[in-house]
Length: 179
Ligand SMILES: Nc1nc2c(ncn2[C@@H]2O[C@H](COP(=O)(O)OP(=O)(O)O)[C@@H](O)[C@H]2O)c(=O)[nH]1
Ligand SMILES: [Mg+2]
Image (cartoon, rainbow, N blue to C red):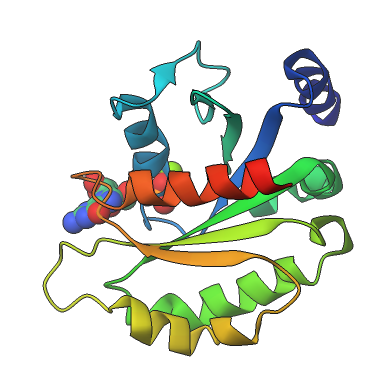
């Protein structure tokens, strides 16, 4: 698997930006990935596996990996991580109970040596649901303002309607072109 990633990276070349989509189950990761592809500003490329997609934008290109069961793939974490430029962390904004676990996972990832230079986009998903947590509350709970050694951005979204997804992608594009 690690060799496959390395090969894909070499085929796609340096313009390709490796992205991992992470989060707990049922947060909307896969929905977001496929909503990127059906957004009119992006063009579809052949799918490589069920949860890996190439998102091609006019000036940049993201190779996005929706990690289904990270724990099952722990043996290749280092390969994933060392090629990763962006982490998309997807949060189910309706699920207050699991935000603590998400916070722990976030800081564990940020402490990983191979992710030292990765930028983090946090999608506060399911904003369409009444009584979902808002971005200010989520930012506060995740203590995002204390993150000084990674670029980060939080974006509210609804994967079902795609609201907020283009804005998140735009932030990634701006980061990619700045690097
Ligand atoms: N209401 C609402 N439901 C969503 C949204 N995004 C995803 N879902 C639903 O949440 C469930 C889990 O989504 P999925 O993408 O499979 O989550 P994953 O396990 O993180 O990949 C599915 O039933 C989706 O239809 C959203 O923005 N709003
Ligand atoms: Mg999924």
